[in-house]
Every structure is written in C-alpha cells, then in structure tokens.
View (spheres, helix red, strand yellow):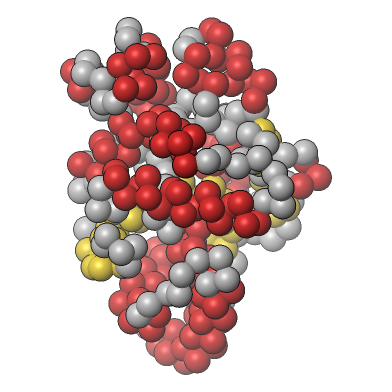
Length: 305
C-alpha cells in the first residue's frame, strides 16, 4: 500500500474533515483513526487491486440494514480512492431507482396493494438501473444522468435535479439495503413474518412476487457487481432504532418537507423485515467483506471472505 502511505496525511485530513461535517447531524464518531486504518484503508486497497487487475470500471456493492451507515461509508471510500489511488468514484443508491408513485399505484392495483409502498424488490425500475450500471461500465464513455428520488415526497425528482456523470468512473459504489440480496426458498415464504404479512398478504402474493423479482431482474443486476461489502447489524430491532435516527436527521435537513413519525416508521420497516432477516442469515458466501456493527453503532470487526 505504498501509494496510500505517501498520501496518508492528505487522506487523514480529508477523512477527518468529512467526519466533522457529519457530526453536525449525529453523535460524535469514535475511534476515528483505528476505523480508517483497520477498515476503510484495507477495503480501498482491495478495490484498487481489482481495478488494477481488470483494467476497467469496478462496481462495488455496499449493503446493510437501514441506518447501518452505507451512505457515510460510501463517502469515506470515495475520499480514500481519490486521495490514495487517484481514482474517480461515482456513488449512487438503489433507492434512487424507485418507481414513480404513479407506477407503484398501478402495481398496487394489478398485483397487491402493498406495492404502493416503496422499498422491496419489485418497486425499483430495474430496466433503468441495469442500463445505468451498463453505461457506467462502457469503455466508450458518454455523459449521462442518474435519477434522484425524493423520499419526503415519495416520488422521483425532476430530471434537472438528477446526478450528472460527466467523467468516466473508475469505481462505482452501488449502495442500498437490498443490494446483492438472494431469493428465499418457496417453503420459507409460507409462514408470515409479521403482522403486515399476516393481515395484508394472506395469500402470499406480495412476498412471492418480491421473491420472483430477486430470481430474475435483480439477479441480473447484482451479477454486475465485482466486490460486495455487507454491513452486518446486530439484529432487525436495531434497524428500527437506527431508522428512527435516520428519519430525525432527515427532518433536520428536509426544510419542512413531509417526514415520518415514529409509529409510521415502525409500520414502514415491516415491509423490509423479511428480506433484512434473510440477508442477515445468508451473508456468508455472498459477501467479500463483512463488517460487524455492534449495538452502539460502532464498527466492531471485519472479515474478508
């Protein structure tokens, strides 16, 4: 990691500056330097090695439960890849590819009312997402736009607000709560996992459709990923707690736009429960790096598979 060593001071300065900016919206980060040295630098070096070997754009899939730190870690990796390896990184979330409110309304009428709520596989525009990843990997690069989704309005933002990609990406960090998810066995869909499924998906139509999507269009998308990073949260209960924190941060920055209260969040995350628990059980063999996060939201350990 000679290149990192020669640029370590610059990496450290940019890294600490970024963390300080984030502490305005959350509690202070702890063990900053040990996390840089023991987690973020080794992962960045592995990404660089893959890029050097393949000599093309590398897609990194970063996944973890809601509030696990995907956005923060994505930004940190981007800093290191730029300052340490002079690599251009593009970051985007699977959330930005949610279908429009109008499209989900049609799904809710045609398939199940539960598809009106964004989140699970089936509620993303998979054709647009696949084409975006393919465009980013093209050898001959052309400027293009990546959509942005406005969660406070529950709809896709106008094109003038989309992310502009003007330079070919060396690295793409593709993050999201279900990135890299695998389908369940049909027998595992029989018993409802919570009140939502028990009362509103009695015939298993919704969860069976989600599973079918994972077997088809999402499998094709996730097959484009070169390196997978899984942020392993202690339990689904912690997803709820951290999602509350995430929503409170959104309230601070949304400037009066619509946000959810605590009860609405509790109901909302039920849509995510089945697949989140499935991913927590089946991360081995489906991840290159697993970062264990403790109950206090700190990076505890990391394993490279």
